[in-house]
Length: 241
Image (cartoon, rainbow, N blue to C red):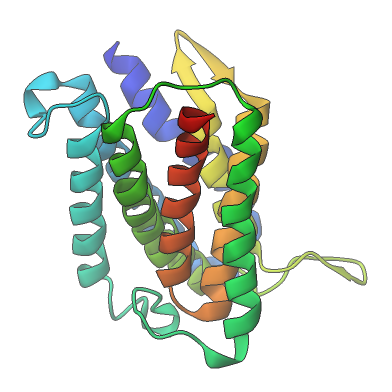
């Protein structure tokens, strides 16, 4: 059981490590990628620990409240330690880039609108804990770590654009965080590796768009709000149908 817990914490970042190293600005940024990898693994271990070790659960419930709160605290601690390093891409702020405000608002609203497709999923019983959890925890925890910290480290260390001939595929940091976000949700280890392709596609696209909004708006505010509202509505619509 313990090996599953460790493997699920390590595998996602190991899968994308070769791609990150390939897209480095220069060899001096290897240390930043090592830092990225260590932070991600520690975050995953801290996040999953209360589910694995019941004695660590401060808040009891069907959802991982303790893990999420620990993830938020760990993210804020890492941000404080790395604030000077992340200064060129300091996204943990309320102020939005006025030039990108309109398009980022529309992108955030579009993400929330995708939640209405969940109405066609199988119904769920009304559960107030689930609704409150989805309206509060995922956006705070995941946006602080994935968008405010990990994305910032990639923007520092990776090339500005991916190019194939004359074609530009955009910012590699945004792409990699999207992939990592998808892997975290879709990759599981239960004696063997299990991969949910549909879950990966959905969470990859979500992670990519929230990362793009963060870079354009220079803030995680809209991704936090959009993320929590999307999760909340996905569950609420299945409960009231």
